[in-house]
Image (tube, rainbow, N blue to C red; front, side, top):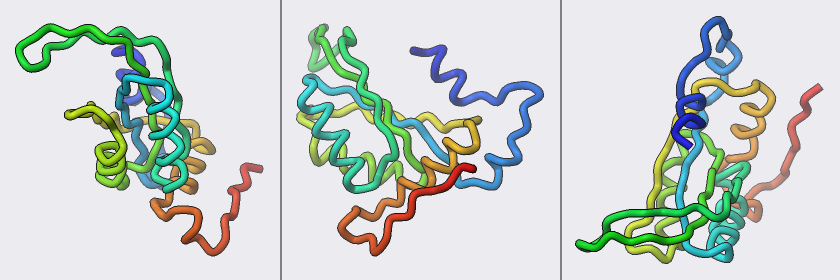
Length: 143
């Protein structure tokens, strides 16, 4: 997992980022949950609120951690949430509102490079304005 995030946050030598420089910055926000049901519930709510463009649910993580003086071990699901960096606070607030954990993990990894059409899609779809409040929803064209 660590290697994945190094790739997300570091630029690649020789790669031009001028297209990304023109677009609003994006991030991958990570949280973990105890059940598949909660993973789906949080994901659907973040998408409905347009706080995220896409969320991957990674099953069967084994977490070992210290909590309230005890070493604990659990199976969890990891959510990888693609969003605009400007929405991190709202994403965090929504996760806290829905999450069952007393102290949910919410980490942000700024994306240093992304395929330009994907980057544009993340920015265009994660508006922070729920669907019911939008007058029109125009899908972007990637000709």
